[in-house]
Amino acid sequence: MTGPSRRQFVAAAAGVGTAAAVLASAPSASSARGALAAGADPVPPASLTADVTLAPGTVAATVTGRVYVVLTTDDDAEPREQVGGVADGVPFWGLDVAGLVPGGSTRVPLGAPADGFPARDASALPPGTYRAQAFLNVYTHFSRSDGAEVDLHLPGGDGHDVFDGTGNLCGPVVEVTLPAGPGGALRLVLDRVLPPREPVPAGGTAQQGNPGDSEHVRHVKVRSAALSRFWGRDVFVGADVLLPPGYDDPANAGTRYPVEVNHGHFPQGAPRGFTEDGSTPFGAFWLSGTAPAFIVVAFRHENPYYDDSYAVDSANLGPYGTALNTELLPEVDRLFRTVGQPWARVLSGGSTGGWEAAATQVFHPDLYGGAWIGYPDPLDFHALELVDVYGDDNAYVTRHAYLDAPVPAAREVSGKARFTTAQENARERALGSRGRSGLGQWDVWQAVFSPCGEDGYPAPIWDKTTGVVDHAVARYWEDHYDLAAHVERNWDDLRARLDGKLTIYVGDADTFFLNVGVDRFKERVDRLEGSNVTYHFGRNQPHGWSPWSIREFYDLIADHVVAHAPAADQPAAAAWRAGAAPADGTGSEAIG
Picture (cartoon, rainbow, N blue to C red):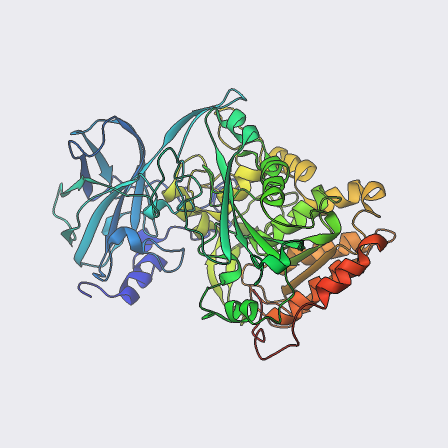
């Protein structure tokens, strides 16, 4: 590693001795109440610019998208591969570009008016030698069925990983010394197109990827008619299907199996981390012969806003709930020997997948027989992490008489803050305008839950710079996607249909404060007559906590399936449950 240390950079970005580097510090009480210093203060012109050229012959047509300049002192990987998260990423600047022609150039200031993170301007960085790289997130134009004309990135089997996205552009790394002299300018080139992660078959598509099948893992991809109508072009969804040992044995040709739909982010590998050689804890358990014989399904639904759709129909993402539950799931049932009945179909997931499991069970109560919901994204929007979108005027600060306290977005179990809501939103603002960060948690919630704005993009839940909340948009969220509000509003209809079908677990020191949303959901739903929801809370446990081992979890959902089988199916269900060999030493690790 050359140049300034990471410790020096963190100090600069945090404002230690360099006030200009503070990207998301809170204002004093004397500041204008409608604004926040997360980019609201006027800033001088950038101290350094980069002229980025699209090399002739790299692409055949003009390009629209977002161009970035990334700086790092670490030579272990390309700068684009080090953008990372809020607290651990290297500095970068982003700016929209339209109609960039091959051989043409665009100028990117490393400061205003480009959006930078974690430093506004390159002048805030410690002096030294840096490695610089240009990158361009390529947008596709969509003429949607709702009349919106929008430019967004169409992922190609990469889970909307912007800086490793199929079809995106990057260039060679060059060195730059900071501080730059007066009028300093970098000259960077875009001359490489990132390929798909897996080969695309003839006549196929990179959408949702093209992983190869193996003995126990198969893959399904379908064109969604509903999504294709919405987006005005062919759109695909897919599934990874994990089969139980012995599935292909002729002796089992008449056996049908219950299904676990395991929700989560875009799959990276087989469901649940299964490996054919049994080298992972789950793989060893699954192949041991002692596991209940489920078919496990993980959906692939990367989309123009994020790596997954939250598995619901949305004004901005389109009808993904319809596509997954009425187009893709029936195809899985058709291709594989599933029982194909709600009592033998359960949901699971953690974090984003936890919310998806909860929403799918709540919005489709008769399609699934139960949901195991781990550390879910907010179930009640009075607690969008620590932001009450209904009652708070500002998402970035808590107002006091003489002090505005920054709202944290992540913490250690000890309670120490990792970063703030303003800082995380500032990163998203640098990644993309109009909610197009592709990697942003707040942006995807906004894309899924918001109505379509006048410009065709998601209506902002709050001003991305100041944090001022739009309560009209919040009311739309409440009417459509607040699960606590939905259950309350529809309890007469849902009471019997959800009876005993929701099991929710979370650590009470969740890293992203998601336990607060679970608490609010519990408080509201427990008041409903006949409520029958099971909760588990882990004392001093962070994000990702589970109360069960792998084996305990699969025994639990297997017993649930048998208990809810209709009388006519009880003999077959009991025989299926008894088919596993006695427990051995596998599966003792905690399940995610």
